[in-house]
Length: 92
Image (cartoon, rainbow, N blue to C red; front, side, top):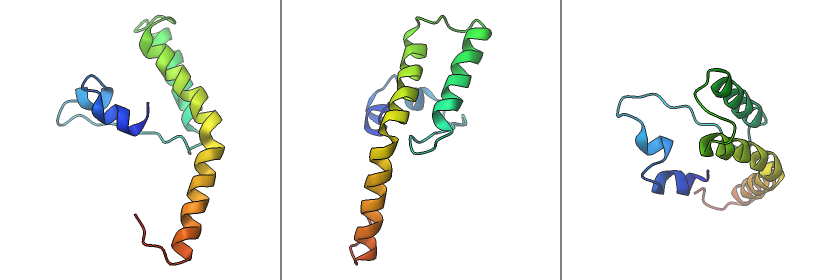
């Protein structure tokens, strides 16, 4: 899920977390993220917490796939941002 969608969705994992509950966020630019997501899916299925057709599982697998597809775009955007900073632009 995109950051803005996660924040705006009142039913998202982030917004359903208890006030003192720990969270772990993975970014698409981390090459380990899709592997970790797929491992989480496999464990959820092994534990019987989900079925392969559950929306939560399908969303997770789609997220892993999209992370892999979008990583080159993210890397290029970060490179461009660093170039602007090096040229004296104000950091966001």
